[in-house]
Length: 140
Length: 275
Image (cartoon, rainbow over all chains, first blue to last red; front, side):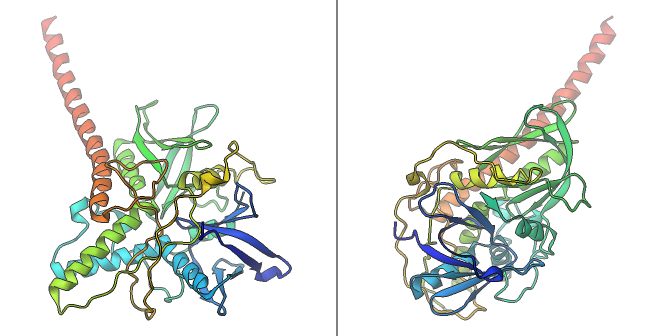
């Protein structure tokens, strides 16, 4: 399929580790495979990380733990690069939660109604307006 | 498969909101006895450890494509299970100390998946557009559809995630689980062609998160997610009705049992008076 890209991943901390991997995005995880293998080699949770454009063909993901581990991803084209950046950002659960809270607040402001009431989930902790912190736009 | 544990533990301990936490009993795989564990639900991840203050994580369960079901009470505990369908996937047996705990955990777990949130956001996005249109001067935003690169079967990915994430206790070479699967199982039908993406300034909210495979049919299939076009509003309502039914059923069952208990009490009185 056209979307099975191989991306060159560099572990910036250890630049000797440059690998060409098949990368797949499922919910908020990024799986990477050695070529042709069925089982993924590894999985990265796409939360608490920062995605940045590095140059026309590459982007990076920095995980915001103590190690601040950074991985570079080199794509085949500019379009592919942008697609990946957009998709990874949008895949974050926290990012979606912020969107939800924004929509909930705005719909309530515009219509006077809480849109979550129709689903009976207005009291669920995870959808509360106080959830979700103010982060820098490029932080996830 | 290597799951980067540090990223998981960092996410657990960071300041993003915790959706639910508390003690639950977890069934041991082989002995079927229960062990008390501290559970933390954050996003679509269920972490567990021995005690709240522990630094060492015992495991993580990724909550995608699982059916959460109430079970018969066991040993005075209020049991429920998380059933993952698909080869190489298992059922997790959990239990709460009281009915309220059981109900609130089941409800929290039912609304925890990434897919659920994705549909909810999509649905609310549409309502927001509609509300704006009705409220002020028409500001048309062209619909953007972004197909995520690299699709993968959800069930398959859960097999890999959940089989290795519950083995934090056992460091060393990763266990390889599951039988052989052909490569084609991992790939889905050709994705929807993407449209031109509008350039937006960072402060604008994006309109869609469309890389999640849509669902089709009246009840959400917990296994495969067929790639078929659908009307998000209609199907989300169905999905929600389904989950809503689960919660309604829980409440109905609980009420029924209370009534039965009360009736039973009355019967006893009658029995006593007859002797």
